[in-house]
Image (cartoon, rainbow, N blue to C red; front, side):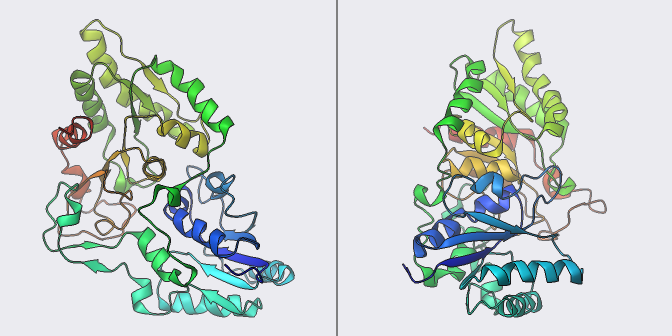
Length: 374
């Protein structure tokens, strides 16, 4: 801990999922500079469907203020205004938690922060090792993923970030406290109120939404999956979470569940909360679920942060494990096809053959491993 440091600037771009993945690093910075005012330089919002970083971090005690700018802006007037705001605040330390965007981008960022008068830069990825998620040979530690990955895996993004700022201390990634959102009593109470619609049953929480076309498993797959889960787990309630514009897709998927209920002439609650909850209220609700199912999107990382076991359906646009929900209790269905790691946001040529090849019964099998571990 350095009590002489009074102002720390943290640089992290992105939205809900990006912020949650960096939570251990945010907590580490707070522990390293407990007496300092810590502000976040970020972009918000990223897009209409994405929650800003502040919607996750408010209440955690990790940051007390924000500087914002348009991501990727090359407008010299805007950059000059940002530079002046930072200069006037006079931060003594910069903690760099941005995603890796290449060595030249890192050097350019470092020059900018030096021009802002910041003398100590922590975590700027100025070499290849800091830029890349390390390759970890062998698959013994990742039995949870259904697709065989015999030759190895990549380091999780949370691990890369905290490795780069290791001079500040040990982030203890495997300790649930490192992922603590410090949810308030009011947020927990709101979750309890809305969970009352489940009539006291254990809940299967689901988010069918995603910002990217390449990550979308498809509404018909979700509908078929929820029908199968209602057949297998009739004593559970279904709870759907997500953004307001995901409500209709969630309703479509939930019809699979409802049709089974109607055919068997019984009751099984369906609670659609899309657009009703803030991200932090969503986290409080997910903490009460027996399991969470979703895409590679923000809600899966929220569920993992509150220690709810996840079954996640992933495309292969990212390298395996880099953006998986962190922790050993989660199951990820990921098919490593020949074009894995493409980074595409929209996949048309290959017709999303990675995620499109995932079958409903594969996901059902992973859900059973969570809900019926023995």
